[in-house]
Length: 283
Image (cartoon, rainbow, N blue to C red; front, top):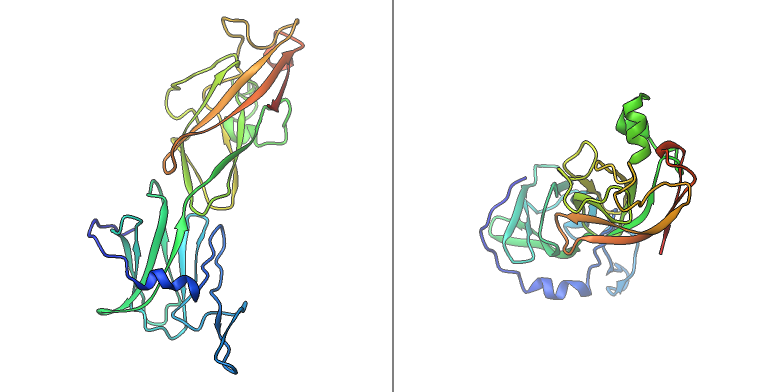
């Protein structure tokens, strides 16, 4: 990835481009339109490719992809950050019909400009919003979701791995935005047996972070043993049962503030961690 802090002005043409082009994002490339009807010379909606140098521009997973016309005059594509600085540059090799920009980590969310140039001449330009939106869809435990890849994540069956499997949890996260996001920390607070505001490391099992591409849903597995034992306050599995609320918080690299959601939890059935009923539901 080529980056620089050299400033570059947004061009006036970007302000008028919306009337003649629609650029789609959100997990797939969208072809541009409307275009001129060769029979009438008027603009009409179409599902066909654009007549311009940019055939399609969009974010696919973690990558901004720019598709070019077969015989394009574009020699170089520049990506401009929301603050007007140059994010990166891609040279267009002879015969190439696509260039891409990969978002591997933190970046500034907002409106990005894609500018195609040939020497000193600007031959194509457009803009699109690149902004993640994470939503917590579910929280689950092994006893309620044995079909998840628990042994693959925490290790093959053994007394140690079984202990981990029964005390850890997964969090299902969906990215409904138009840009990728990176989760740097996972925490469980409130009425769980082992609440931690500041876990050692990321709180994610075996990883420093998890990337959630555009339009995808991923399971993030905990590494802080949130349901591993009964707390000093007695919250957790017990013959008499108890219940409460806990909050899952995701610290993210791109969008602030952190993503958080509160769930209701009920414990009953046993004092043994692997023989206890734990029910989790949204508030």
